[in-house]
Length: 126
Image 1 (cartoon, helix red, strand yellow):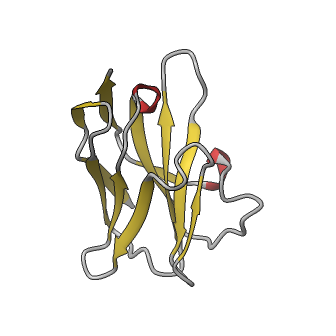
Image 2 (spheres, one colour; image 1 turned 120 degrees about the vertical axis):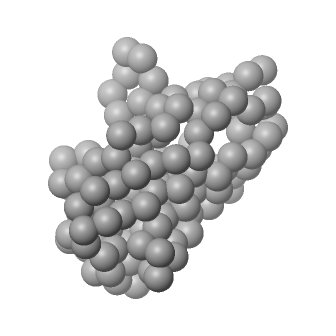
Image 3 (cartoon, helix red, strand yellow; image 1 turned 90 degrees about the horizontal axis):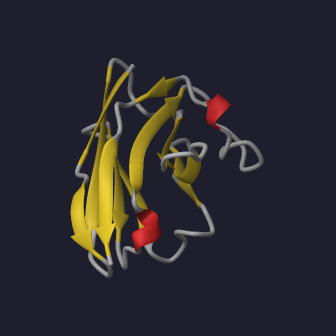
């Protein structure tokens, strides 16, 4: 599976961006895909995930109510709509995929994902 993340950029605080993660080589059906982010000096942080088997979505508390996940089965693509962006959202965002449908207790763990995209930089200015 290859993942291609795109959509990052520079935006002012309060603005919006939409990230895309396109998958090839395997469909997302019956799998789990997720977004993580990393800032310098910190570990990769869970942002959100879609469990495609039941279209259930999970969010980190820090983005709940501001970020929205969606998926397009036909395009094998996952989207992350980010609204009301804050400077602390500045990070490199990575999409990840797993062939398994993970339960909520482990879906936030980086080691559950086998495939990773290259990352896209989001910079939010104050």
